[in-house]
Length: 206
Image 1: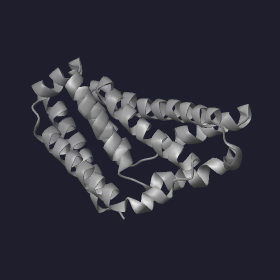
Image 2: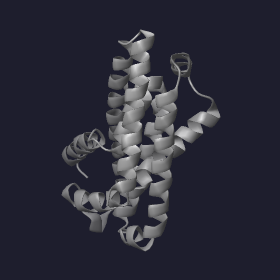
Image 3: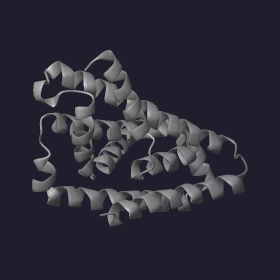
């Protein structure tokens, strides 16, 4: 991968990261109710899952997405159920609880958030097909070295985290402009509705 192709690859992944989908909706909902910091682990989990798919694509393991279809389906439904549960919690949360959640989470909560993000992205094996179609534009997959894969993974992870962080910060700013209890309660319900919708989309999509 040349410097020029690497830069183009980075920009393309960044744009891919901010494309609306269940993951982006989950980050928006989390950031609107708990602040941008609460979405860091969630974003990291999504990015790591995507990087695993990228590595699988580099090694030509797209067949895994077909042979393990049942596993991916189970992960998808689990992820969808968890998103709907979180949406319900946001919808029914009191304003005081929302304010306290901005102080940060415990290590246990951070791990749970990371796993949630990982499951959201891992539930879509079509991502590996995207990378298989996408990567040949930027590199020759027949002569890839371990360094090439590491470099592509680092670029992709950075681009993904930058895109998802931009979304979480933007959503968090909307939250900061709504200070009254009624406004915060409405924001909780909007965010909860977004999260529930994301879970429903994740469960029902083909």
